[in-house]
Image (cartoon, rainbow, N blue to C red):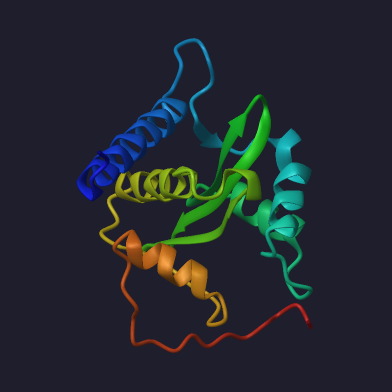
Length: 171
């Protein structure tokens, strides 16, 4: 006879197996490129396509300019995850002298909810910590409830702050 506790135990076994598979999929395989490393010049268009596919681009922000600014300085970079030489995730990370910032965290739709977003954020945190900055911040559009839940699950807290901005490019 099948009891409810058998069902719970079976579910726990399945969940453990899935976690193990995801963990194995995220591990670095010796002789292969690390899972997450800086974006290469020949991957810029793929990164932009990913950003567009997941809805991160806005008409007033030129992604080519954003990438050029991030990759052209010592205090920022764009990290990328790849599978079979295809960019599957990105995150722009930088430091401003006081704290770190993350922008353009994007995970391919086919790889969402696999731990890749969490791995990208961990890579960003490691990048900022390596530069001896004590804090990492990010901005989320108020209508992006899913992103807010994701970041809160990673331990990020809402700040009682209003962001003000001023454009210098006439847009």
